[in-house]
Length: 428
Image (cartoon, rainbow, N blue to C red; front, side, top):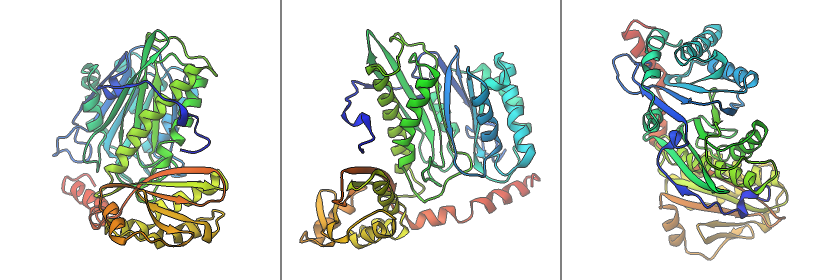
């Protein structure tokens, strides 16, 4: 963590629990198979998450200037509506680069959900993930929404997590129970993401719910803080998606007291939200498309926060560095060269680099640590790389991965394969 992280000194008395996005009181979820990507493949690909009572909501969306139709619609709904009650999300099709029709399709989906739940369309957020550039198969989505709405469950989180998977190999879910006052509140969520992962945000969807009693303003402050300390700290391949979305809904159904701005409970809530987001973010990196290593990059003692961030992200995104990790090669030279071009203020002769707890580079020169000891560390599926700039007191952390041959093979023909499948079905 860094000096801008107030949670680094806060110990959250939390209990990890089951339930994911439906762990909080008053939330239900459901999922079904609609054949969105391929009607011949029956896998869960449409999910609905609902708060049974009024909820305050905040969301963070992609920084990419090319934004999916669903992102545009959801951004508008978050701006206009104080009581967001539902999220509908699909996998298999991103509804991105689909023009006016894509926006109309997102609006039609929100309206259909609203009709079945007795809501206004602006109370529904719409999210999509999958192939870019293909129109949504609305004929396979809209007819299924009434059944999806009728089968919501208070233990439907696992199905919801599976329905938003694309290249993910496993569902991602996490939830905690936090003592507060004389009661407790819950925070839980699900996420998807495995490729096109890069801050700001990542190529990902994450839906988080809480029953804490929190105001819209306080929720917004907590969400912005938690996203910056979690989803904005991960990178796999340096790409930022058209569909990135993090949504947090709070319905106030916990037996804990209302959270007041500036109070200890407000900090507790902020740190609890950060904990859930960080665990989900780490799961995304660990499940990167065919990656074999999870690496925590720690830059410490930089002159400024911005310098620490630049250095950490340069190392985390370097293709050369990632390839050396994949080969279990403790090549600290590639690490220091990335620091050198990062734009951070440095002095070469002050830089120390550690793999795990072992010194690989001291003062910009090779250390006396045996290479065999360093090799042993980078052969592990999880390890850390610490870069001490010895220039100040600022610190920064980024979570990243290696880059494998399988990653290249996996991403070589995704779009053309999808187009071919649709042509065979007479859909493209």
